[in-house]
Length: 155
Image 1: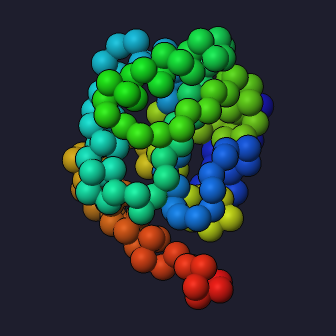
Image 2: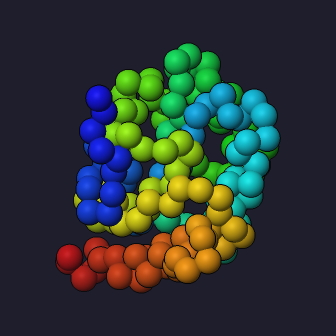
């Protein structure tokens, strides 16, 4: 049985993020790129990238049995959606080990040291909001970016 799903405060292992700024990790089922299942979340992600520029990095983790072949398909999907992101491919067993019993698709907002700051699963609106009462992804990323240590500050 896979471990419990990742939650705020947990570290994501094995996902390559630079640590130089907040990161948004989008975990998807690679086969969902074949249909329109990811169009709405992709639109939300594209809006976030347009609004916030390079204040955060984006990594897409494509869960797939086929590996590189599906990774290439996901890359083409992202390019067609005008989304700038690095793609990492995970076998379902690797996903279960690293993310636990987590829903797919889901967004993970990472703060310092690759720790999960927020998990957003479910339909996102144009601002990246899940549900009516939650902070938006845009607000969370902007807050993390404002508080990110700079090299000049030495922290």
